[in-house]
Every structure is written in structure tokens, then in C-alpha cells.
Image (cartoon, rainbow, N blue to C red; front, side, top):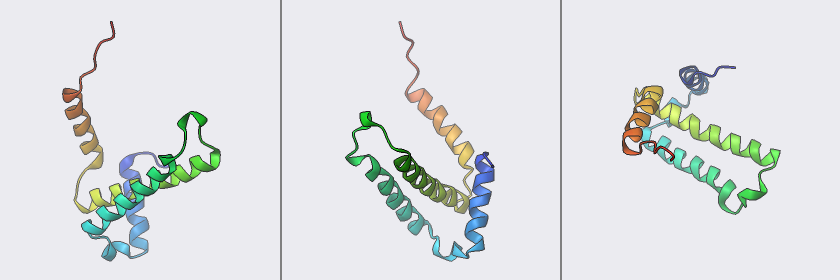
Length: 105
């Protein structure tokens, strides 16, 4: 199984291309689809009491929704020629400056 984010992105783009879906994937449609998928993910947590945990079935459904969200992130970053791995690294660096680690005393 591929685990490098760039390899996964290439696999997702190839999967989409094999189906000829590029023509449907405008940035506007992709961004709206990303919001829909994020909302579908969120519904799994809306009324669940986290202290009760999650069943294996629920975890599989959540994994599917997380994968749907990631699919759209990877396709959008591909379409915009954004290196998503570098973007994440840059964002973590930026956030580290904004939210530095506080030493425990």
C-alpha cells in the first residue's frame, strides 16, 4: 500500500482520469463537494457521546468520509498545482510561531 502523500495523490488523479471525470471537476464544484463531504463526516459526531466510543462499523464509515474529504483535497491541490505536502509543512511552521509550545512547569 502506498503511504506517501504524493503517491496517493497520483493514484487519486489516475483513478479520476480513468473515469474521465476531469470535465466535472471545476474548482468551484470541487470546493462545494469538499464541504459536502466534510459535513457528511461531521454528522457522525453530531449526536454521538464520545465517551461511549465508536463501533467498528462507525469507524469504517468515518474512515470512508475522511477518505472522501482527502480525495477532494488531493484533487484540488493537483488542479491548482499546489504541493500539498509542502503546504502542510509550511502551515505547521506558521502555526508553530502563532501557537508556540508552552513548557510545563
